[in-house]
Length: 449
Image (tube, rainbow, N blue to C red):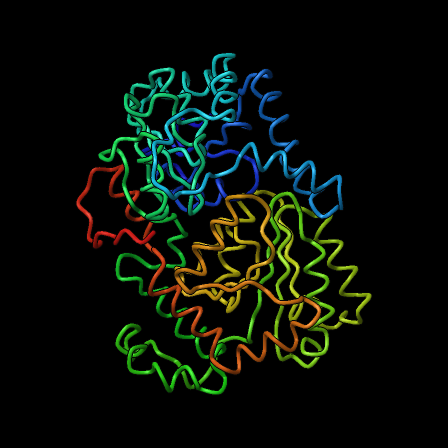
């Protein structure tokens, strides 16, 4: 475990994630400056005890297996329904006391009492910097083992279940960085003290924002809106507001700086990979005519990348591979997050299940939502529709028709614009300000639930 981090930069906080899906690591990647560029992975760090490895591995494998089984009739539905029931988020209304610990939280404490994360917390306690966790278990373990530094927990969905709060929330020292207004209100119902909850929004890469003034974000959005409004319908209706918000010098509505680009992203378990192939089939003619570029992002799953390459070849898109059909491969999770961030600079539409990527509509990216996998994604979908930054997909087989109807009408440009206006953008900066105890240049977020 590093005492110094990458490039010789000294850490000002410990940033801890888990290798379980991408959501928790995606948040940690955006916060890596706090830790000097390095992130500690609680279930896969140098020196982790074998007992911890076994406990974490069993949990991760169960999650990924059930996610992959989900599309299989009967068996997949039954297995997933049970897991989803264990992790479910209860209805918010009517407001009521929800502080009673859940079965999932009971299992968390059983693991902690058996020693889960004790070695990690003990090691970090030798240099007790602020501890910023993007998964609840390390934060709860730090609280349980009386970590001597400040303890923070970053939520990674638009709503959270009871397992995110400790057994006795009132006496806990954990402070929460809430990704949405609903999370703020939910944590209160779980018994977390109001003075330990900070509404920050989800942390996103600084490279796509450009500081408190969001100069880079506005520049990318201006170019994006050109592609998403080919007939100028949205521009005609909202041009004045766009020029005021983006600054006249940044608004490039006269020409696009890149081809119309759609990025399809699968989750860490590789579920819904088939939708990427269905998308290629539907858009094959438009791709071959160079009317749209498609990025198929498989993360670190090389098997999924090969699956996409074979499909592209079978569809006669060999000449388009590399430029109009882009299938990047990454050797590590860190390389994936860096590469994905670069891809988003020229992404106009992000097609994905409503995971933590739902928050990326705040960067002015229109989101097409694939079917949900899990209770938390149902809440993410509701939030994304509520802020107006995303919409659920129609049949993938007909995407060459309905998607381009939406684009031509200015509807997809409206999704990108709504996301930019309504969704939190500066979560990374707000979290850094709070952890480092410095005054913030940013306005207080409204409690949009």
